[in-house]
View 1 (tube, helix red, strand yellow):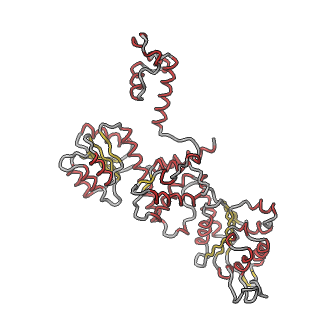
View 2 (cartoon, rainbow, N blue to C red):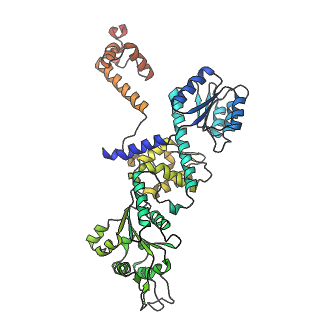
View 3 (cartoon, one colour):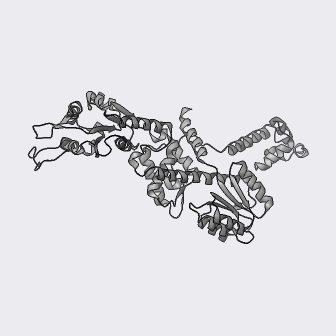
Length: 479
């Protein structure tokens, strides 16, 4: 049961970000416009209701809205003209178009101009409210993108992106580590953002105006590790034709990040331990130790206790490194941060704001395990933008061309209306089967009147003769 909690949290988060909107409703049929406006106001939105095209154009000249809902045929100016005017706003308004006289040409033109949907009258109120809800979610994401743009110019000062409790905890630890001169050990799976956290610690520390030098211990051949870290003097070994300052010398009073620390050879581990103990290092081929004043942050994607047990990592070095331990959560443990992460990535990949992500897609992304963590999410967005073609609304098939069904977790969370509809359908089917298709007895069994029973069957699209064997009996016809 606990595995479903992160998914529940992200669904609650998505509901919360679906903020209320300023809606301009333009409909000349007042008998339709008034109940539409009332329903939208019941949802908490601020609604301005107008009945003519020129009035809408004049209103838009001096006001702005988050969502335009307009009929196509309006007195004085058609709805397409109103849509074009609303899309000139900065940012452009989301638009829904209604009509009782639909044509393919009108629909194509409206969608090309940026309409979210084209609703054929008469349409169920639920259909309109669903589109309004999706428009609100999209707007909330756009606002989050704008907030991120205004909040930070430099990524290194952000730490991890998101509002989850895990991210808040990491943020607190970043602040504490930045105020300390102690060695920090960052632990987290591949792609969780360990280097970004290290940069945040450096940026918030007293060393911020000095160098930040990251190095991957796994990327250096073992024979070259000591020379790269500690440097060497001319003639120290074959090929050492001149002096070379290693990473520790180059760092000065800045910060060194030793990523993939678990891959450091044992000989180099011994020398690193001496650096931490004595705050000096000795370049290869040099008779003199050099003072070391930089800060050290180590990062690992593995459980170092297993490395210690296997004899490939020194236990005494581990305790020297883990003075301030900092664990980075996997993305699957904080799915409520996915929308904020996508917003940040879109700032970089789509600075013009041409693309948006469908709300259903956000829900599917929240159910994916993300074994590659934030790095995989970033690459998935790059792929979605590359595969979107002319589409400006990114969907699941853009993120996962092959389909991620096998990797999704948890049961789908449906809107409450759909849950109730399915439950009522199932209950009526069972009651009709139990009573042999007799609606009066089925209604009594369900505790509702015969009239309510018939109406619900009609609303739910149920066959009035659910039990074929009983459908032709005289008793059923008498009911």
